Image (tube, rainbow, N blue to C red):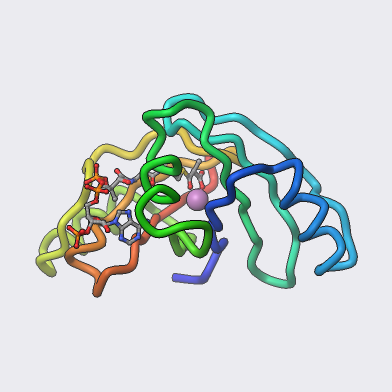
Amino acid sequence: MKLEHIGIAVKSLGVSDELFAKLLGKESYKKETVEREGVVTSFYETGESKIELLEASNPESPISKFIDKKGEGIHHLAFGVENIYDEVKRLKNEGFQFISEEPKEGADNKLVVFLHPKSTNGVLVELCQEKS
Ligand SMILES: C[C@@H](C(=O)O)C(=O)SCCNC(=O)CCNC(=O)[C@H](O)C(C)(C)COP(=O)(O)OP(=O)(O)OC[C@H]1O[C@@H](n2cnc3c(N)ncnc32)[C@H](O)[C@@H]1OP(=O)(O)O
Ligand SMILES: [Co+2]
């Protein structure tokens, strides 16, 4: 597995895109809404891994809930895998708990699934696989 991206929950993409562009010295290369996840995303290239800024697209979004509880900050780590179905099977056998075991369409042309933070030391983990 390799670290594909780090997801950061932000209140306002308008504000945070300006901040991260200044910080990283480059503009976001892609903005994409993933309505099923309740997010608007903005991606930055940072070497082999990316930064994904996440703004809530509706009040029931996991991002709204997260920000209400914990404030803005690191929301999840996403690991890129070759075969997401094999990895779900492997990690299930290892005793990890998935939020939903069925990979769904995420941002950036990927299939994604999430492990529950309760089974991963309090860190929300996403697995993602490039769609062919
Ligand atoms: C588009 C895509 C992509 O990259 O392609 C994305 O990334 S989409 C990214 C947005 N989508 C997602 O996050 C989808 C997966 N997330 C979820 O299904 C949810 O957010 C859960 C992780 C199941 C939490 O939902 P739930 O309704 O249970 O919320 P809750 O506030 O009651 O939280 C239950 C417990 O989990 C903790 N918790 C919640 N969100 C957390 C997070 N991001 N990291 C670590 N812990 C977290 C809470 O503090 C709480 O712990 P205590 O019980 O100790 O208080
Ligand atoms: Co993500």
